[in-house]
Structure formats: C-alpha cells, structure tokens
Amino acid sequence: MNPISVSTLNTQIKSLLETTFMQICVEGEISNLTIHSSGHIYFSIKDENSTISCVMFKGNTKYLKFELENGQKVQVTASITVYVPRGNYQLLCTKIEPSGVGNLAFAFEQLKIKLQAKGYFEQSIKKTLPKYPKKIAIVTSATGAAIEDMKKVASKRWALCELILVPTLVQGNGSIEDIASSIKYADKLNCDIVIVGRGGGSIEDLWAFNSEIVADAIFQAKTPIISAVGHEIDYLISDFVADIRAATPSNAMEIALPDINEHILYLDSFVIEFQNRLKMIFSNKEQELINTRKLLEQNSIESKFSFISSQIKLVKSSFNSSFSQKIHIFQNSLDNLKSNYVLNHPEKKEKNGFVQISKDNKIVSLEDLKIGDSLELQTVNIIADCKITNLSKQKVK
Image (cartoon, rainbow, N blue to C red; front, side, top):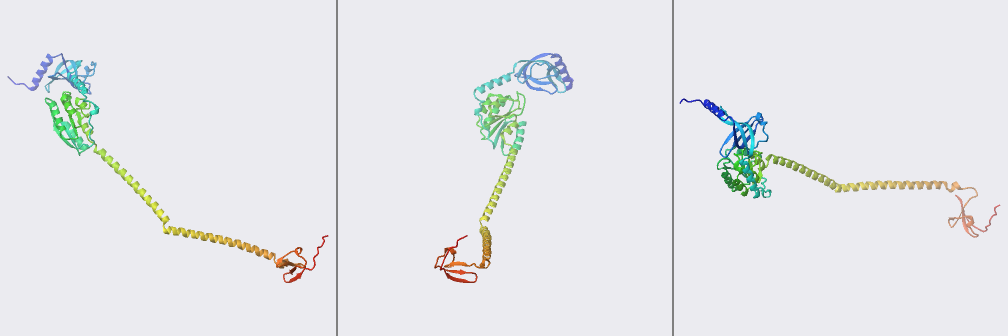
C-alpha cells in the first residue's frame, strides 16, 4: 500500500461525502448561533450525543420566516461540504424550519418554574453586599480568562481587598458537582462575598450553572453570592438564585468593590470643603477679634479719657461761647443803660425855671403835695429845702 498525502485524503473524503450526501434533512437543537456582519449565519445543531457545524449563506437567509435562537429545535435541509485545508466538514443549509423548542431550553424553563415555586428567586431573601469587602472568594476556573479579568479589575478598583481563588471545573463532566462543592467550601471561608462564574461560551459550555444542584448550593449559602456567568445576554438559573447578577465576571468585581478613584475624588472634595470651612471659621474669628478690639478700644481708659477730654473741651467751648454771649448781652445792656443815662442826664434835661421836686428822697409830683409838707427843690447844682405854706389850683382857660 502506497501512502497518500493529507490533501489527497481530504480531497477524496470531500468527493465521497459531497456526492453521497447531496441533500439531507437533519433535526437537532441550535447552539453557538452567530449571525455574521456579512449576512451569513453560523451555528451548530446537536442532540444528546453529537454536534455538527452548519452554515447558511446570505443568499438563502432571505427565505427564513423566523429568527433563529439558541435552544430551538429545527429541521435543516442541507448538503455536506468539506473544507479540505482543515479537513472539517459541515452542513451547507438551504432551508431551516422550526420543529419545536429544544431539549435544553425546555429543561431550563422547567427548572426555572420549579425553583421559582420553591421561593429561590424571592427578592425579599436576597442578601445585601457589604460596602467595603475585605475578602472575596472566587469560584471559577484557575486557567480561564475570567479570573485574570477579575484580578485586573480588582487591582484597579480596590487593591485593599483579598481575593481567594477556589479552583473549579466550570464545564464538562463533573462540573456541576464541582461547582456546588466549591460554593459550599467558599461559604465556609468567612469571606464577605462569593463570586461564582466563568467567561462566555455556548449554552452547552454554560449549562452546569443551569443545574438544580448548583442552585441549591447558592440558595443555602450564608455568604452573599454574585453570579457572573458568560456575557450580558446570557441568563442562567444561577443568575436568578444568586443575591446579585453580574453581566460578566469583570462586572461582578465592579459591583463587589468600591471604586478607589471615586473615593479619591470624594476625599479631594472633602478636603476642599474642609479647607473652605476652615477659612470661613478663621475669617469669622478674625472679624470677631477685630470687632472685639474695636469694642475694647472704645471702652479703654485712653478712649474714656479721650472722650472725657473731648466732652470737657466741648463744655469749655460751650461755656466760653455762652459766657461770651452773656457778656455780649450784658455789654449791650450796659451800653443801652449808658446811652439812656447820657440821654437822660440832668444836665441835658435842665431848663430855666424847672426844678425837680422830691419828698423823702423820692421824686413826687406837685399835685401829690399837701400844705405843711417838707420837700426839696433841686437842679443839677442846687438843692433847696422848702415847706409848703399854701396850695392853690389854677383854672385852665
């Protein structure tokens, strides 16, 4: 027997398969569905034991009357095609028709209804996450990308938290039991939070997190649990049972840990506010000191002496002004008296034949005298003592 090349073998297999299975109808459950930007659809169909890759090119997708979803049970009309460089074969689909809900999706809905009836999804029993966790247990694969992503996020957000990895088988045979066992173990580590999860994958890869055994372990845990399985679009039973659902493993760390940058900004704002308040306090105290100093200055001995001195000066000025005014008034009165004296001086009033009559040193009128009265007749220069011996009244003609 002469050996042949790999390419020759793959070419012969291609010819044999493509001529033998030119048109077939296959029934199975859709998984790993990808709708490419080119318009081509890539997926797999599977049953309990086997999986086969499928593709439907854009030219045939226009005949689809429904949207393909993972978990759908479908019938595909296809031919087998072989990709020689890799030796891979797949179904080239020309027609896809639904044949009912897939077994996995049906099982998921069944378990979901069962656990909901048992109260596993009640919001009232969900545990609250601590604001500043000191220790977090992570139930995931030790070699997966999820643990590395979570470590990166944790180091950036809050490096003060201790992370404890509980290495766990997250897919394949024995993964269900291993996940449940790891959750129970993590619950005994006296951690603040337990994160259960893994990175993205097909529904089959994530199926262990849709098991009742894992749901029981999560529900019975005393430690708050975050479920972080797959991508944002993936919803699993563990998401509904856990206290918190995270869209991704990285998002689980964002939920579990505070952001140190936010705290730094908060502290900065707190420092600024503290400084502003301190400045305001000092400013108010300074103003109080200024007011107190002014008050002390106003009530000091020097101030009082100054005030009294100013009052004395004011009184003195007022006294001088008043005294001057009085002197002026008296001077005016004296001048008036002098003027009147001068005007009324006897020398200026004296006329020939006129004398002043006085009795008992009082000036009297002639009409007031009686016979026998003693009186004085005086001029400026002469005083004559007289006695009335006769009085007669003249008749006015």
